[in-house]
Image (cartoon, rainbow, N blue to C red; front, side, top):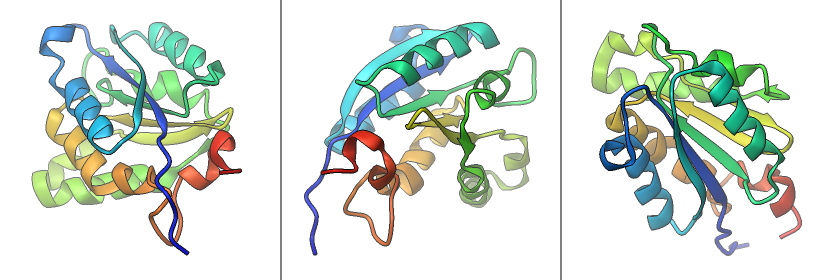
Length: 171
């Protein structure tokens, strides 16, 4: 049985102490890709790499019925103020451990052993899927092109995340 495409409402959060809307290449990469795939941009924000600011925005989106998926970019490294995983992981009802594992496997083919420095994670909170990606536009491109575009497409078989989003289950 063929399925019709279902647009998912996705919010993008760029975590950076230096980026602005004009030079947010990673956020733009994700926005362009999700729109090209037929999804809806629910919201897009930039916050500094502060766990409480990150957690505040993510918490608001988790409670917003107009947001199905959240993708963050930045703050997943090992240096300085990188704190996205610490900010977000405590909000998860369930962690999707396979996402980080698969992301690092894909990254290994491109950046070799440097992929061990990535703390990309994913999980579900209040029925909202959350994916935390590194801040490089290449990492965002790879995560979208090799994982997210398929898992956020209800036509992808044998299974996908869209089938698990509460708002979209009955469609």
